Image 1 (spheres, one colour):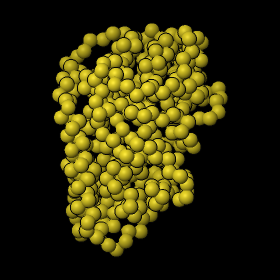
Image 2: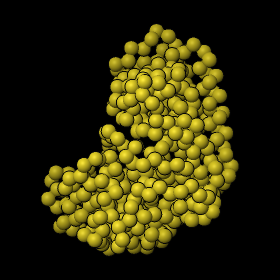
Image 3: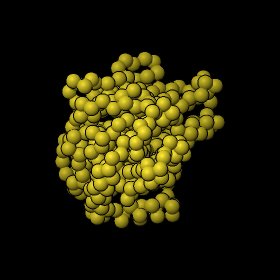
Image 4: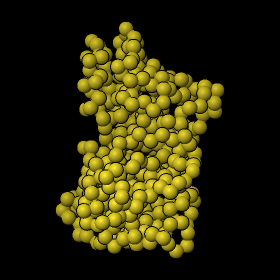
Amino acid sequence: MVIMSLSTLIKNQNICEICEKKQLNSFFQIPSLPTLTINNFKYTKSSKSSNKKFKVRYCSHCKVVILDKKIKFNKLYKNFINKQPQNNFIKSEIKKKLNQLKKINIFNIGKNTDFIEKKDIKNINYLKFDPTITKEDSINKKFHSLPKLVNKYRNKVDLIILDNFISNIIDINKTLLILKSLLSKNGKILIYTNYSSFNILRNDINCFYHEHVHYFSLKSLLILFKKNGLYLGKFKFLEEGAFMYLIFEKKQNFINKNLRDKLNQEESCDKNFYLNFKKNLKKNSTKIKNILKENYVLYGYGCSIGAITSIIKYNLEERISMLIDDNPIVNNIYLNKKKISIVKINDVKFENKRKIIVCLIPRHYKNILPKIKKYMKKNDILVNLVEDFSVQKF
């Protein structure tokens, strides 16, 4: 096999790179959005802000949403610190494979942390292909070095893990061709990723930022893998439908009723489906603007990179007094040269004024609600930035 570069940027064109049909349509854009991940907000007040226009398009055939201008990994992941929790579904699949074979090869592709338990290390040949590292060692390889190991590991890899990363890969078609050549006869590709159709339906802008190149529908993933000779073996929706867990393999499987029903639902995602998302964003912008006309102190709960998208889109950066986060990665960020502190809720000294807390991580709303309630006083407001805006007045 010829070693292929995985850093090539795809030129802007009207043909969908997933289904290869001329079906791409304009979706929405944000005029200026930071290109960095959240733990890269270390520039000072006088530093030049690294902002770019964020623009996406959707494919009316396969329902994928695609970022118009891709950002290279070395710009996205400079000084990156990963704190994503490990996926229990993937851990379970590793144990199953260890019960079948004495020794297995695992390739972990992405920026997530290791999945290997200490007691299993001796039975696993483990390699991690990480876009965030600057220096390789015997375990940690740069993502772009993946093609170099094709000849050594052709048809020998038992598990390939793509946890919260398949949507970040710039040249996805070339990458999947390489993964197929690596996969053993009974090998599996384990994927955990956000489900764009659900997030669009909920008017959740939180998942949209420069790190994500593709926002996959179920149909788009089936098409993408099938054209590369890989087939869906299992799928499950998680977190009320916001995320998908999927297993792909070389063995062809039949489409069951559950899968067919979900694909039929996706077919209803027509032009109006995407148009309503844009309309609702505009409507919700007006709602939050009207709420902020009153004399409230504004706090944001959650400081992921997706939270920054919500802040920018809803023009909240000038009004936010502070960001609250359960596990802050940095102590503060700068948005449009304004310094915003990030503090755990137990350490916040709330002003003796009416306050609004905006939930910037909507999928965790149910978990953070009990934490917030004990700090809310009469006439305080809690806002969840999805659907038609959940506005709770105390």
